[in-house]
Picture 1: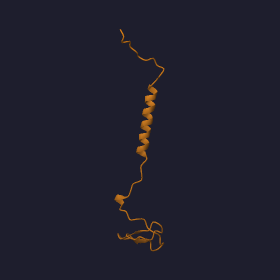
Picture 2: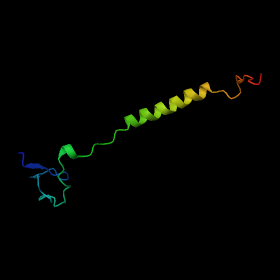
Picture 3: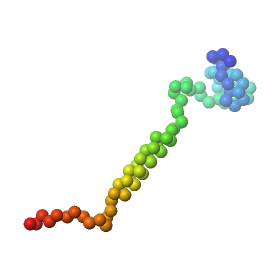
Picture 4: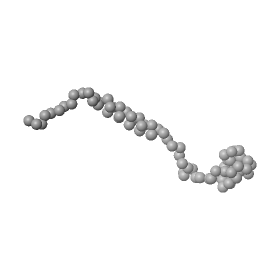
Length: 78
């Protein structure tokens, strides 16, 4: 296959890169978007790491908080 052709995404036959309809299976082809401008699949890893960090920080802060512990109250009326 030379540089002016590509494979049809439906029937895998060699078609021209600028084709709008496949000449073999007669299906409409998706627009030809250069690879540099194609949207990337969203990565869930950073989102999961961030969520785990927020939950972990909340758990650490909650573990250190005890509402039944005596408060350090100093009398300033003296």
